[in-house]
Length: 77
Image (spheres, rainbow, N blue to C red):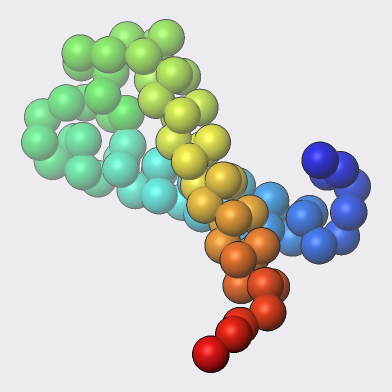
């Protein structure tokens, strides 16, 4: 897979932006509201927070790239 192709770079960037925004919302609003601390620091610790952020980012990047690929496929009715 070539990461320098223009058709793949845009979904990759979109996935990274969405991942960052959703992770920040989760870390700073949701987890604080349920008493887990910022980014779940109360129970996860730093390695857990890094692992959660990494898996979360992979999910959103994969989602964006696959969505772009499936959307570009020709439709048959």
